[in-house]
Length: 335
Image (cartoon, rainbow, N blue to C red; front, side):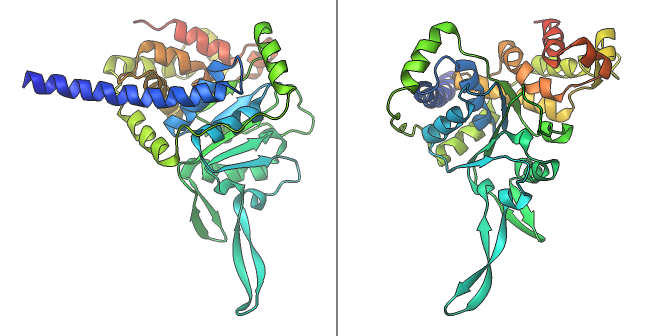
């Protein structure tokens, strides 16, 4: 019995290490194009593995679109892109019925699929689309389907939306409502590259076009990795820490600090806790571990929770950021 148990442990270890090797191959391939942004690359891969969606926020010209394109090549998913503008209509995303002239059957309605029928969908500058168009993403992101004229159409799987937005230019934009933000597994901040990486970036991007990346995964493998991500274990003690963190950021909870009660109007809900756990499991899987660690939870907490904290007017005036509130709550965790 002992030998059989040890063998099963070795089998589990090999399976998770094999998954980590595949995900490291994707990361390394993407990093041949995207230099000096490893935390961002790993966060995007985490969204794919966890089965969620990502919101990338950063100044123009930092490579957000190039990152998503590189990831789509490395994982060999059907890629589609939407460039959001104020005149974009919901049907421009979901698709519509059009009249087609058929020589034998005459005129008939045919369904023309929109860009949401990709597997990896880049929604560029999502905050430039109107709320009506933004809402068209809700059903697709939450349920993996779209409904038009009462007809339900299932989107291809695996399905992932990676949206970008520019935080410094607010003219002509429509900030995402709370319900839309909550659909994103992670809010990924894209920082300016370090000085030591700039020379490499400038050298790479001012030469002739780069060669296409060789696929490291396919849709079937990614689907299997998503199932394996759910198998990553989470100890009850860490699950208690997750619930304690959610309470610490909830102004109505008895354990909330005076600072949180003053600064937070609405804290992360159940979906925020689910995002934190799934993102931590994805991080553990990318490192070849079958169990989540406290370090995993602490690493992903800011990107999993900051967009789910709705600050009071006083906190916004005082410049208290959601990131700082999460960081303060995380620092109070006990091992």
